[in-house]
Image: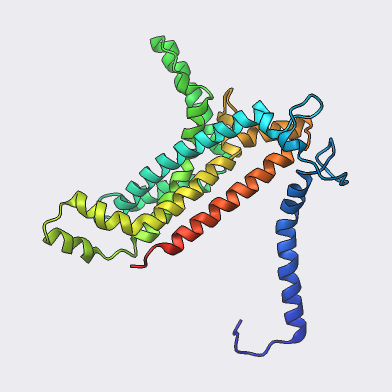
Length: 286
């Protein structure tokens, strides 16, 4: 659409209506969920029966608030730990991979790059099942052949970290690579000519240039890991992540505490996204 051309009134009205309906459809469920977190009702649904903080602060016996619900608190902590480890590993390996694929000449570059993108197009369910079957097969082999029991090869915390890391790293790789393509290699050459070592060039020139992409991809990696369900469902052990725990509560019937959890997640993730946006805008342009 050419903005300088005149637009009919009917078109403008329809376009405005479309935008309004789109955002209502997008945000209305979130707003309703946040409101119901304060509903004085024993069921996580309408009608509204008055304002209450019980689903955050109540200590029982009739109602247990989120701050006193050991199951949800424990699952939140497991999700945070998982997301931190996945973010660290994904940012480290993804950044190193971006450096690798920016090298001009090495054999098999295109094939390796294609393989690196493969986890993004594989459904999370298939990825989770594949990792579970592979880990179980290796565990049985080591136990039958060498008599060694490897807990890592059973559904566990670290298997969930590995499963999420396997596809979130690809996202970090793409983000950092896109930023690295804008880097002027003559800056590195100038620093090397002035006596800097290769590590000093990376530390003081390349990495500061990549900082917005690294911070942004790390924040998104954290959020992707925290909310992941499909892959984690098949790899989780006795320590359930928050999405798995919420799924079990919804399946078995839950109180409005699930709305309280959702409210805190919406607020925290939105805050993290805004902070990431502000930090990205404050980065100096090259």
